Length: 239
Ligand code: SF4
Image (cartoon, rainbow, N blue to C red; front, side):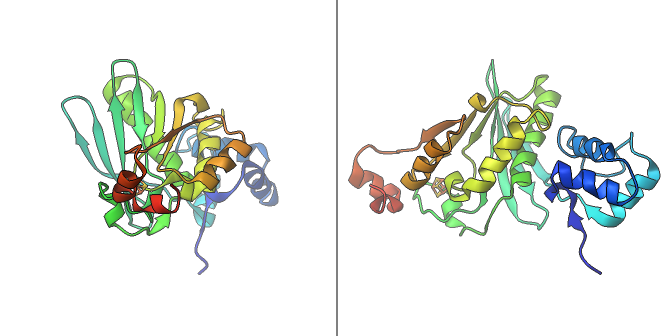
């Protein structure tokens, strides 16, 4: 049997077409799209305004690949650290960081990292794969739910400062931000998102060419080139 397709790999248009091809109305695609993204439903059963037959048809044709928070650690100061299991069993970390006025999600962009910063635990794992846009989106959605549950307010900020170098997974990071900032996704302002990089000049120039609206932070760790090379050896290539 052919493996079922991940329904979230479909665009809204493709979802609308799927329903028309299966004898239903195109707007059913809009309803399912809303469940998948803004309501972050991880099961067809939870889509309560969709008929049982249609849900069964979706179940027969698709899966919804999604992340699971495998372990959550809550600190006295309200910080929550999540061990996140991906659909293929690999793990990444995400963190909710509260202050008086904000809740920030610190999220991962890769499983492991190809760079070799000496102070970093992730550097000891080899880079296994890039996260896809949905896996990045899901980390944000999960932390938004935790923020509502434990802090009584929505998530306010996002930093790409977890596992991985986001500029080494640029296309997927950009796609995830499109969805996070879309009204059909989480509707967050790009001004509240910061991509933190160890500094990949070619990609920073690309960000400028692409006229992205989110913020950029560069982790120098040292402003002295030799010291920086000692602790971030890839600095030899990008002094
Ligand atoms: S780029 Fe970030 S995740 Fe990668 S090794 Fe350096 S500090 Fe760690």
